[in-house]
Length: 212
Image (cartoon, rainbow, N blue to C red; front, side, top):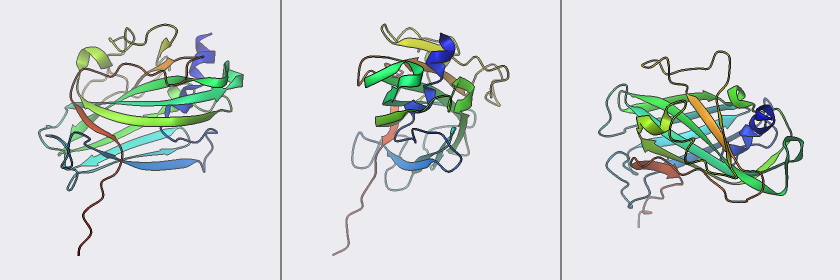
């Protein structure tokens, strides 16, 4: 049954393609939502922050992050509603979330996650109402068997990364980059509770004032 749950993992990617093929891709920016200028980590006018999904490969990139040092862990949570009858999620669908992590370097982030490690591409699906947000580190939350599982409450089901050779952080080879999936089968809008650490970026865009 766990494999059935995990096959729907690809639907958690914000606006990601429902069928994970080699030409499927989506891109979007992230901004600090606390103010027009952003927050203490993300300056909306100077920080470059974005994600890209191609097939089952997710990349989250950032340059110009403030207050982070090399090796600091960034936690990102992606979520969406999904219909995947082959995975047991029938209309009107159910929500899910994926927890991934990356390491800061030189004031930036280069997070690369292979969602095939939790079953991406195993069934046909559509997904909608997508979102992506990133947070400063909370080690207890993002541990492989961390508190993210406890806040993935019934009827949602937490599924950890069970890949034979999961990709791990360079600074901590025991920490999986793709941490796990929280899947709901019947409730639209169901999402995992995010980490209690500071929100630094969420899917969105910044529009500068046009010159007169």
